[in-house]
Every structure is written in structure tokens, then in C-alpha cells.
Image 1 (cartoon, rainbow, N blue to C red):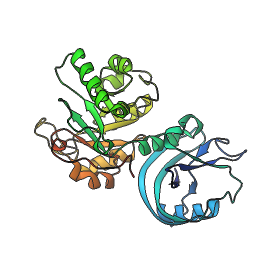
Image 2: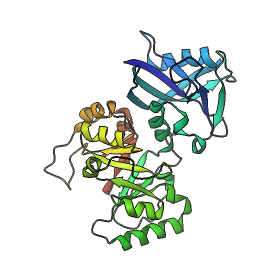
Image 3: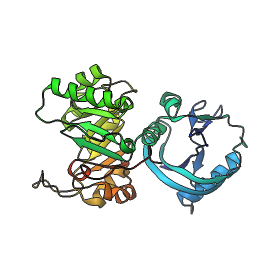
Length: 308
């Protein structure tokens, strides 16, 4: 497997720098995050410093991990380590002839990028917190957290009414609200859906268009693979720790959680016995962030969008 470092370089307007692959190269013509192969003896961060200096003439002063994705192409297998550049100096210029362009996150099209870059784009667009609730949220949107309206036992009419109230109170929330398992209702309302694990074995294609998020409940490597094959934007992996709601279910533990995330081809939220206070630990284990119910009800949500 070829180890590759990719840099997420952002300008003052929040746009991300993309570089087009040259003719004659693997995946020629597609737009990607700048970076390159990690040489023997280099760390990921060191490789990124070298590559961005060689390709762009940029001096990187700091970076932080976003996501690490294993991917099998017909020609080769790669592991793509994406890092957000937190400090840099210089004016990016194409030192090796690659066309460059700055693109807003909302305007980036995964279809124009290598397949392994699509989960990175999803990770950049996702927040660190995912709130799951059975009741009306009182302050949804603080910090841009994802919200799943699980509403166990509620009728479809009740769920529809709840979604309409949430969106009426905060119109931009439509992008971050998902309903549990009801694909037809999600299509009707133009919002996302969070699939149950059983649905991953029943569906043969992504159930919603790309402008509506698809999440998936996963508990092992097989289900994570099914979610990625289906084109889900993210997954929850549970239970990480012991929970009061499922006392007879053996928790994965952080070590096993990290192993499973390392093999996943999509962003993963830690779920089960975790809360906002576990965010940094989850990120250290490779997670996009943390998800939950009880631990999120009284904790102020983080500010800002995405991972940055």
C-alpha cells in the first residue's frame, strides 16, 4: 500500500486549494488536494512539508490530522492521510505545472476528484458533534452540530411536524437534520437519513441524492464496509464504552475502535458511553467526532463548522 499525505490549504475566504493531475498520470485530469507519497523515514507531517514546498513553494508551519482513508484502485492501493494546514507562509504557485484553483467547500464536486478524496471532502463538511434526540431540540444549531431526530415510537406525522418546526426556527438546519431510517420521509422533506445496520444489507445503492446526508449505524468492520460501499457520508460505530441503555453489550473499547476506524473508508463518529468531553480522545483514535444522546443534553455545543 502506498502511503500518501494530502494537505488541506485554506485561504482567508475559507476556500480550499485544489490541484489538477497532469496528463499521462494516474487519474489524469481530476482535481485533488496537493501532496504526495511519504518517503521512507518520514512522518506524515514531514512528508507534507516537503511535498507542499516542492509542488507549491509553500512553507508549512503546522498541521493537524483530518482523516486517514485506505483505498483500492484497479492499478494500486493507497492510504491517503489528509491533514489540515494550520500555519503556512508563501503564495501557492504551480512549480511542477499543475493547474491550481481555490474552491469553496460547498462548491467542490466529488465527481471531479479521485474516489479516495470523496471521504475527505465529506469529513471537511461534517461537524465534530452528532446529537441524537427523541425530543424537540431547544438550541439546535449551536456550533452547527448534526442532529438526528430518532423519536422512537413517534408517528411519521409527528416526525414530519418536528422537522418542519426545527427548519422553520432555523432554516439552514435543513442541511444538518437527519431522520432515523425513514428514507421515504427524508426524501419528502429534503433532509438526511440515518440508516439502521439492517438496512445496509437491504439497500443496493445510495438512497438519497448527494445534497442530502446519509449516515449509518455500524458495529463492526463488515458494516463499515457496507456503509462505504453504499456511498454513506459517515457512520457511527458503537458501543465504544459501556452504556446504561445496552448493559449486556460488550463495548469495543478505544483500542478496537481505533483499529476499526483505521480500516474504514468514510468518516466515523464514536457512539456509546461517550460525550463531548471525549472529543479529543475520539479524534486521537481517528474519529470524525462523537455522537450521543444523554451526554449532549446539558453540554454547550462547540462553535464553528466542520473540523476547523
